[in-house]
Structures are given as C-alpha cells and as structure tokens.
Image (cartoon, rainbow, N blue to C red; front, side, top):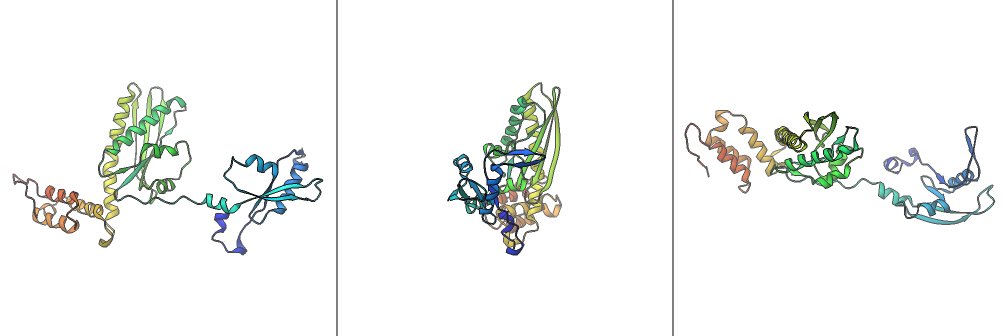
Length: 314
C-alpha cells in the first residue's frame, strides 16, 4: 500500500490500521471471540494510518526472525482489557525501504543473455539433475560465442523454483535477452522446449522443442545444447541488427556500427559487396579503426571473387 500511495494525493489514498496479537480465541457460529481478538482490536486503534501495532508477545516472536524494526510504546491501558498491554509500533519507514525494487543493472556494451533454470515437468524430483545439467550445457555452449555476454550459471539459478517476471529478472541481472524452457518425460523419451525472449519488450524471438531418448543422457544434452545455440545465434544477430537500425547515428556505439554494416553485407548484392564500395561503407559506418570487427568486415568484402586475391584497403 505504501508503494501504491506514493503517487496518490492524500485525499485519495487508502490507509489501513493493523493490530496484531497472539492469544486464545473462541470460534462460535462462524465468528471469533476472546481476549486474543479484543486486544488486537484495541491495538488497531493505537496504530497510525497505514501503520501496524503489535503486542509484546508478537514482538518477542518476530524479533530476529523478520527484517522489521519495532518501537516500544510502553504499557497501554486498553478498553475492556483487565491488565495493561505493552505495545510496539512497527517502523514502517524501514519496511518501505525494504520493499523498494532493487536498482537495475546497466546493460553491457554487447548483447547479453541469461539462461534461466528450466522447469521440471516430468513429475519426478529425481530428474532435477538432468534438467539442471541440460541448462548448464546450454549455458556453456552459448558462452563460447565471443560476441555475446552470458550471465554465470550460479546467478541464474538463484531464480530456480520461483515464479518470475522476465522483465524484472532482466533488470536484476543486467541482460537484454532471457532463455527459459521446460522438460517433460514419457517413459524413456523426453521433450525439451525453449523460448528466447527480448526482455526489453517482452517479445518472443524464438521458440522450439527437441525430442530425444534417455539412453545416453550426455549425448542428448550435447545434441540439444548444440541445436539450441545453432538456432538462437542467428535470431540474436537479426534482433540486434533490427535494434540498431532505427537508432540515430549519433547514438550508435561501436557494436551497433558493426551490426549496421553487417546488414549491408548480408544483402549479397554485387554493389554492396564490390570491394571499393564495400570498403568505404565499412569505414564510414565504423568510424573508429580500433574496432577489429569492422576491419574484419573490410577484409571479408575484399575476399577472393572469381580468383581475385585478398585486398585490404586503407
């Protein structure tokens, strides 16, 4: 509620008062009675709007177990309660700080991806080792792509078994792309599904499934990992090219320059690949000569054509 009210004018806010007590109650005809309820009701009246007031017994049980701070309000004489009750106020200011979203990590200079733990849908907890091993193989295979920044397995596995929001995970890990999937089993056959998501937009870039037998687990993991990497690499490159194309020239970084030039080469037209023209294009699109990828592109354009030798233009 504190987060909701932060952008609302005071007259339109919804504030709750909460009183919490621990004690015996009596349940009768769908209603509850007793001192446990009466004390909680009186503590509610002591709470500030949007605040929480608890009894000493609750404070003793919660202290050290919850990340909360309590302020002693002393003993309170409560209406219709025979003995004084020591009350504590929960420091809501600290709760609001804890509830704030963690700061988003900045995106690295090159494309970044996190391979999240796949969901085990086999119904067999003993298959967790296979599912986790599959994710590790895929992560290792993707990490071999030099142009891609891959989040470490240990960081991604923090989200194992949790309901996740892809955009939030991407912000917390500082990545643009997220790969997630699931594993199902029928007898000795398994089906592995995967989907690649652009976390900045929430759009699915790629999705596919892979079937195999459990006769040789290591061989199956290797084949699936190779297939996944082979499928997502061109999709990632295409997505990066499309992302870089609309940018104003002044905002392009070196990698974006490279992608824009690469898109020209992939047109495979005679004009685009003619050495003098192609060389000028790479040099104009990639203004810094320190970017080795761009100069590799120049060499690529200047390669043998009909028996011609390589010509590197300066």
